[in-house]
Amino acid sequence: MPHLSDIPLMTFRLLLALAIYLAVLGSATCQADRSRVALVIGNGAYQKVPTLPNPPRDAGDVADALQQLGFNVTRLIDGDLAQMNQALIDFAAAAARADTATVFYAGHGIEAGGQNWLIPVDAEIASDADASKRAISLHQVQGWSRRRTASVSSSWTRAATIHLR
Image (cartoon, rainbow, N blue to C red; front, side, top):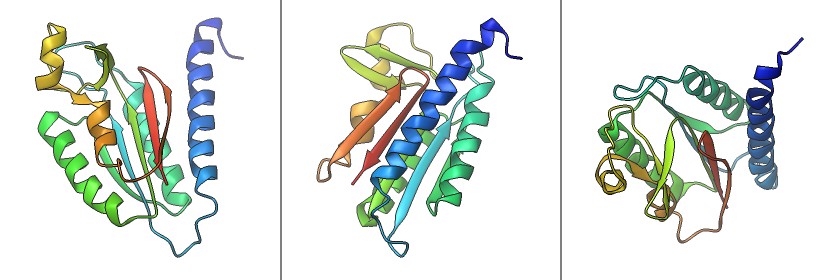
């Protein structure tokens, strides 16, 4: 029987599952031979702030589910700034050729300067100004999708799923 303290985590996981289901449902009209790609990031082993045990596990579960649904999945677990940037660059190229592209992120996130930021495991952010140099803007993640229709589902700060059509 779940403990009362587990309810927020269970609620988060249910919302996460619903977001992924809706993202995939939106691509259900894609034929089996069409290209589907996903970038799944799970950051938990933070160097400057408390670690998070769940994001790597959540990312693994989401990546496995997306693979079972026919997505070509790129996984990044505990990515630093350089690794996250490279993964996004590589993913942007794959997404440009794909019919469906999905990004999933689990880990620390902040809002600074009116933007949402994904926090790499090596980030040291002492002020809002640090975010632009040491974190990944959600706008940056969406930037490569400007030619497409994008819908964003999120349970911020824990996860964001971006589904492109």
